[in-house]
Amino acid sequence: MVALAVLLTALIALVAFHLMVFVDYRPDGEVSYGWEVWPEIWNMMKAPDFDDIQDLIATSAFLTSLFLIGIAPFAIPLFRASRLAWWLAAIVSGMALVGLSGVLMVSYLDSSPASEKLGPGFFCLVASQILNFIGLLFIRREVSPDPLAEASP
Image (cartoon, rainbow, N blue to C red; front, top):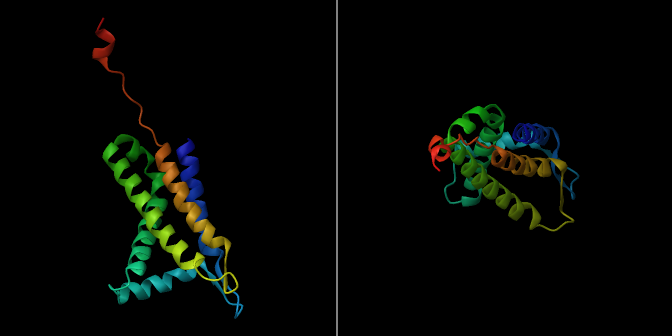
């Protein structure tokens, strides 16, 4: 139940990311919302620049984490039944968390505070990834009792 609650909270935070201000550019007063990330990703996918590794990491981690966050609350029975599926989801979720959060931190926290201010959408995106990873860690599989251990003296 805890895993389901945490994974659903991650999904809600991801939806909130799309509706909130992602970055507030101070000099011109322009804001960027979370849903405006999609046209940028589409442009990167149409003409990928393989020399810019930072954009490749951010795009692949963003799309992977969106898929995992969207499917994880509904795939709990699968993750409980298959340890391989759980390990794969947990490892990929952790890698997407480190990749995207790292790129975002380097991109937005390195600039001067007078030029731009991070909006709540930024923190919702990072929180959704963190909550998804934690929610996957809460999924436990019951260990069936070993019949041979009970029969031995």
